[in-house]
Length: 293
Image (cartoon, rainbow, N blue to C red; front, side):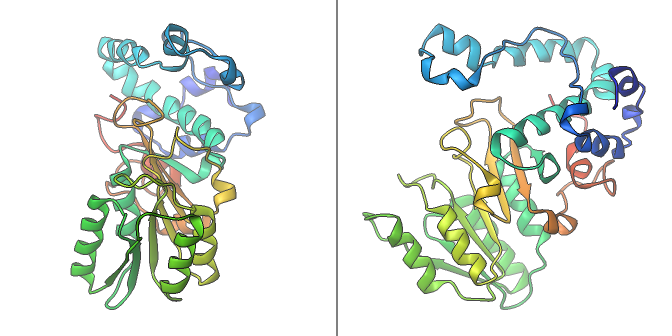
């Protein structure tokens, strides 16, 4: 077991990112969370059904005021924060988040936004001429631009299929994917909840269709976290990304990227920094000095 005293002596200041991986890997029964410099409201989220909207809800569930307190604490001693405190706290966030979204902590990393996460996945896939990327027309505009640019650079082909409105039910979407997705497609990208369309895609069934044809799936869940229940083990996506600053009501600059274990060795962060080569979580947890502010 790694005690708080031992953790304080770890050389986080030199960004020995293998230490991060060690903290991620500690069994839950042995893990000791880092201390916060101020009191954080506690609430039993199992009793949300009895919670009334208003002041109680704001004070117990929306802790954006803690961001201000944290900012003041960081600026009092920025060296102490970056040198000794930041990485253990990011590990704590990662471990806590993994429980909420139903995956292993080793399989999820923190990023600044969903767009960065999607770029990370797409740029990590080795595309070549005539490789196919599959999307629906309800895919987010910025993602379409990314995929078109990647296809221009590599000679890959973007296959975009049209969802007809009004949507009569989830079987309409499933049937569309079944009838148009080809085996051998390099990557399929779907929005969990399309940004500009009022529907929730039947992601679990779509993923099953893709896997039956050996097609890896990237789910853009930018609007899903906090809107719908998430259990990534059950969904079985190859990649899943979401923002925390939307319906999860976290500060801006908070998002996550989930990558299936066997795909992690080929998934690299857009920014190579101190954690490179020390484990999947370590490679993503530190990008530069603005991290965590």
